[in-house]
Length: 426
Image (cartoon, rainbow, N blue to C red):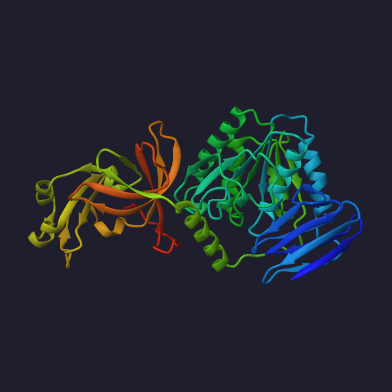
């Protein structure tokens, strides 16, 4: 459906995607960016945005399935308040500016982060945008944090390609927030080394428990922002009472209506990200022992012989014949079996046992490190053949691989993900 819309100066409409907006006459503001005559704006199917006319304006709006245009009620849209906040932050005398956006799930964090970055880009500032939500990472892939220096304004972070990223290996921060803090610190340091004037950091929506608040306060302690922008009144009061006065805490209003994504929509978005990333990727054959594996009980442990197994464990001959690899990792003996073993009969009074099969390795998402131990790509383990001593990894990276980082996420053949959290990673 195509609709022609006339807007008077300062009027606001809300557009729910999928939609395309063409500016025929006038100027509009959306996500912190001013668009003039001849501009086109694409709104994704799971996004919605308030659009403000800066002068009398004519629009042509093409609506896809499920899209609509709404006239917000008084106070439902927050564009003017966000403009005031963007001006306050960008005009700060403290340089470089480091602004962290915090709020619950579906509170508008991603849009506000983009709004702030776009506003400063249009002011001619060199800005870094850091995405710290490992569950719905929009700059790179889920299970990562990422950073980009936008060359131009944008509507949604998914339009951009990350300049740098760090593989975390989880999609839920409660299991790994120490890793996230360290990774975000590295990305912040990288951004500052590149001479940016401002860094805007988006965070996940985990804020509803003491552990979650401890994480966010630790993040603030280590990143030392100049500004914290909080999309929740109660959270703002908590942070104002806990944060030293050198850091400016700003309470930002939340849009009254946000396009909420269902669990299925979130799963589909993650799947689309994996498909896009691994399109054109090639299978790399890596030698076990030559490429190092970090975070794997099996492959990070000390390799042990079959003789050592029989000395320390009660193990039947049938099972022993199916053992293709064994290692010692702390007090855990890892045993990898081929697919032929039916019944597993192994016991030990001395060690904990971690018994897996070769096929269990398939599908794990891994980080790829180069010779400088820098994150350069992601990969998916396609196969592990221990008798041949090789691991096959699907990755777009064609350079040297010195190490793999094991995550806790498996990717299915149709690029859907699921988390495997346990004491010992395979």
